[in-house]
Image (cartoon, rainbow, N blue to C red):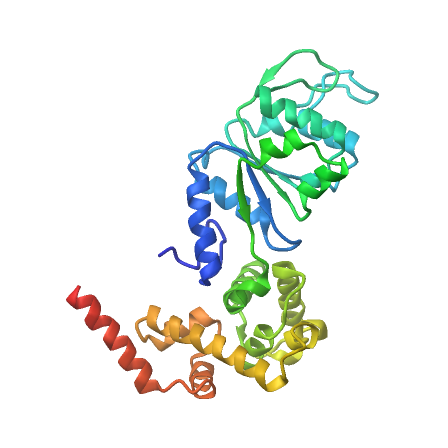
Length: 338
């Protein structure tokens, strides 16, 4: 199984949906065909595109990204395709665009649904012909680039509305990958939060903060509508106000401590919601204990909490230590027999 701590690709998670996603990324990476990533804002589509690149035969060539919604369309054309000398006022020299600079590698186009129809036509031409013309030039230049595009919009709906070309959609969506929102893999939140704390520690050349048990519980009970980006912002803010080497729930921004039951599934009683969350958390903790062969220190690290907090969590979730150890011994025995 691929480690949840993949420092090269930065794909973090042990949930079933992340395991499925990682397996699909590996299969998609084997091809040179265009890829279209679907996912809500903040789900980490650029990191996923980079993972596809790093697992592909193009891994040693450039990976270049551009947000199609961040630039005016006239500037985007120059950015992607480059320009010739004297092609417009101020263009004193020729300039290669991102397609040329990504030659042999991967070009990630985020928010492709925000492209104008004119820009879509230019992109389609490059995908069809494998060549481009810089702005102000007639010379065709060959490019070998794999395009990975991403959007949070329904491109089929945009096609129906006439604001997105159906032929471009068919070109981009040869391979499609759905990026799950964080609420659908909530058990990955402690790992993600711990990874963010380790990144912060490297930036500050300091020891990483440790999540308190209360902080983990608060993070697990939030719905994270802003996905991983919201989690990252919440952890960074909380880290500023933390002391003693521990990030406590009291330092989390107020909006990050809103429980999922406050906003969704209001048909459930509070006790029913607590029971459902506890059951999910219990299953996850038991899974980590099994995967770490009963090593409590390693299990605590994987969960992003202290060993003491792990024991408190086991008691709170009514996981018997002897029973957990017996389950691990059973796994070891089965492995030895096989």
